[in-house]
Length: 95
Image (cartoon, rainbow, N blue to C red):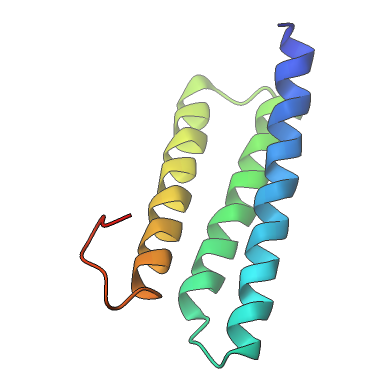
C-alpha cells in the first residue's frame, strides 16, 4: 500500500463522513429532532478538514497531527453519543 493510496482513501472517507453528517442533519430536521449536537459535530468535521489540509499543504508540526487525530476521536465519540440518544430504550453500548 503506497502513501498516495492511503491519502486517497483518507480523503474518500472524509467525503463519506461529510455526506453522512449532512444526511443526519437533514433527517433530524425532517423528523423534528434537535440538531444542535449535529451542528457541533459538523463544526468538528470542519475543523478536522482545516487541520488535514494544513497538515498536507503547510507541513504543520506533528503536534498538529496529534490534534487532528484527537478531533477524529471526538467526532467518533460525538456520533456514538448522538446515536445512543436516538435509541432511548437501549442501555448504553447495547448494540
